[in-house]
Image (cartoon, one colour):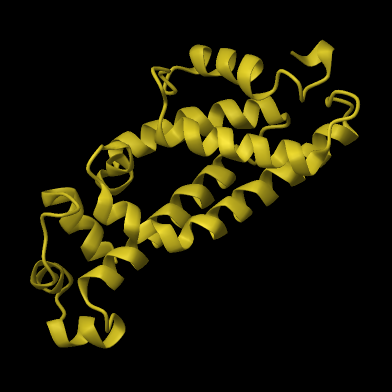
Length: 186
């Protein structure tokens, strides 16, 4: 999978073959087919899923030391946007012609949403315990909403520079947390 990433970095998601991956990895095509019997499509699907999992794991670890949900969202979006811009695979998620990559990630989409939502829900519980949530906030609904907003922001930023911490904090406060954080927290 690392060899697949290197090939994608060098020639784009659609610009490499299984032979290229075999050469990059030092393995034979037969060995690759032994692990990925459906060939390039399976290799790309599993590599994309692996890279997305590494991305989200890295973000979770990178923001774990931050106390508030707002700080975690801001730092996660800023670092996430920067990492996406640096990765050919992740950056391709924002390109208009990504049918091959989008198809490769489709099987992992429900799992990804669940994992991010559960992480956000745990953080919301901590926010509630600290008295930083607005009265009546349903943690499950808020977690689902914040997950959708986060995934959308990173894959389709709609004119917002999420690499800019000040701009990101403003968007997080007004659009992400406006009805979720306690009024004195916004």
